[in-house]
Each structure stands twice: as structure tokens, then as C-alpha cells.
Length: 390
Image 1: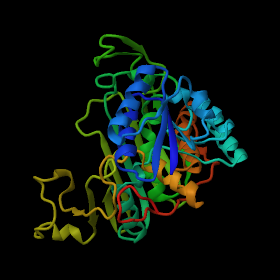
Image 2: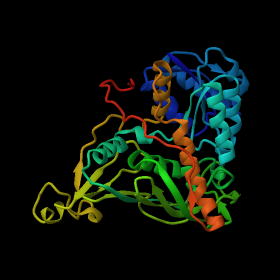
Image 3: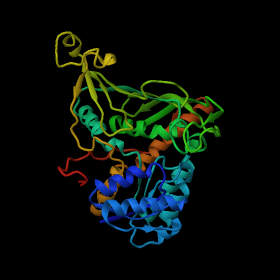
Image 4: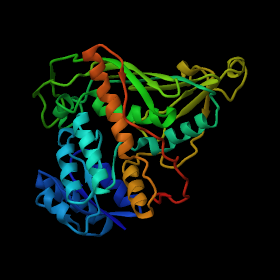
């Protein structure tokens, strides 16, 4: 049984606690650490209530790194703290799985990647939504040739920002924040798993507002000075020849946050929101144009007006609900069996280079050729037992 220590018990930790305690059967929690001790104690109380097991509440993260009962550090700190926490854990001989992004710039990301290789330790991290039923089903559809030769994709994450709902939204607008670093990993990880390695990036980034007023509790009315770019748009060119348009913004009022379409020579695939594990999948092939007039199996305008004539396809894999921690469970199983893990540092590093390339391209007014490697790992396997990985 692989044992996990939480470093950070903030907002995102809740779903990890829930899923490790209730879903993933091959890992368990050894302890919890947070700069605010009450958060760690609350998490430990939850674990005791759900599992009947008492866990350590570490006074500081070094005690977690020194604990011989801990196999993997789960880094749930804020983005600007990811580098220091992950580096310290690796230096202490612990495998690390972190929330996204891997780090806040390529210098930090490259250093962590190299250190993990030097120490022969596993390094992985979010997002793991691409391992869910939605993206895995889309991968099977594309790999089976149902939309033909890949042409491109159109992706958008459009919202007005997080200060209206998040309890501590300030970090979204400082170093390591912004919509590309926050939400880009979901979209780019999905694109890589569907289209393969990216080749180059061209983009433009902007800061839409210099200040934000928090309207969520407990910081209602406080002002945030924005230092991160809050609007990014551009194109990603893939080794396959496909080209994806991507926009991420915290600056626009919009009714639907996510749009994700993949275009092929024989049809179009509408991909679920990559920030989720499930969601509807729609397919439109050339022969569906005429069939849309008469076939009762096709979606009608009153159902999804934008996608008249598209067919809704079934999900073919497990983990369709919020299964955050799936990538962690997969990495832990990979440590035990020796196989590669899917939400790995090769992918994290490639995603990081793509995200930061938008800013480089915007500042230097040029195409940015990518240098990091990327190879898709094996698709998910339906084990037949929820919470048990292949």
C-alpha cells in the first residue's frame, strides 16, 4: 500500500481527501501538513471519520519528508510555492505528485525535471482529467480514425475570473497565476493526449484589468493588484500538422466557460470540458449533414442548438465523475509495478513550455519553436473495479 503525505490542505485538498478515502483502494494517507495548523487538523479529523484511521499532523513539511512511512508527497500548495516544496521533497528521496502547474517558469520546471531524473524518483502532477471517461473516449474515437486525418482544434476557456467565488483568489492574479497557468494545463494536456506532441506556439497575452475587487468571503471588498496576464490567445502547431487555436481569459462575461472542438478530414468531434472527467461527446461526420433532416437519433436544435445534427456518443471508460487524485493513484500503481505513469513529468514539462511560450511569443513578436519531448502514454484500461488501476 503506497502512503501519501499532503503538503497543503486548502480548497483543492477536499476532493483529494474525499477520493483517496473513498475511491482509490491502493493508496492511503499517512499525514497532513499546512501552514495553517487548523486546516491540517480538520483534514486529519475527516480522514479519521471516513476511514477510522488516525494520521500524522506534521508541524512542518520537513517532518513529512523525514517520515519513513511516507512514499509520495502530494504537493497542494499555491503555484508559486510548488518549486520549493517539490525540490525539498525530491532532495529527501520522496516521489512527488503536485497540483498544476509544475512550476511557474521553465527554469524552475527544468530544474525539477532534472532533479527527479538524477534521484531516480517519480515526478508527476495534475491535471489528471485527461485520464477520465471523456478525454479517454475521445482519444479512442480519434485513434480509431472516425474523424479521419487530424486538421486542427478550437479551444476556449472564457470566464470573468475567480474573485467572485474562491475563498482566497489573490494568487490567481500574481506570479504563477492567470488563466493560462491556471486553466491552460487542462486544455493543453487534453490536446496533447488527442493530437500528440506540439511543435511551435504563437500567441498574444494581455492584462485586462490592473485591479480586482474580491466579492467572495472571507476577503469580501479587498483589492487585488493584478500582476499576471489575464488574457492569452494564440495557436499551437503539432508535429502531425494539426493546428489548434486556444484562448484563455479571466476578462470576459460569458455563459459557457468551455469550448473544445477537434477537426478531422472526415468529421468534427466536440470534446467535453477538459476540466471535468466526463461530459457529453458529440460527433459530426460528412454523411450526417443530410441525415440531420430526418434521423430521429440525431440531436435537434432545441437540445443543443449550436450542434444540430451531431450524434451524442457514449462514454467508454470509467471515472466520469470528479475523480481528482486519479493521476496520483496511477503514479502510485506505476511505482509498484514499474510501468510508466500517465500524468508524468515529461507531459508536465511539455505543457509548461507551451504555456510559457505564449508569453514569449507575445513579448518577442515571433513563433516559438518547442524543444521539450513528448510521447503519449498508454490509454487507460478498464479494470472493472473502481479505484483499482492497471
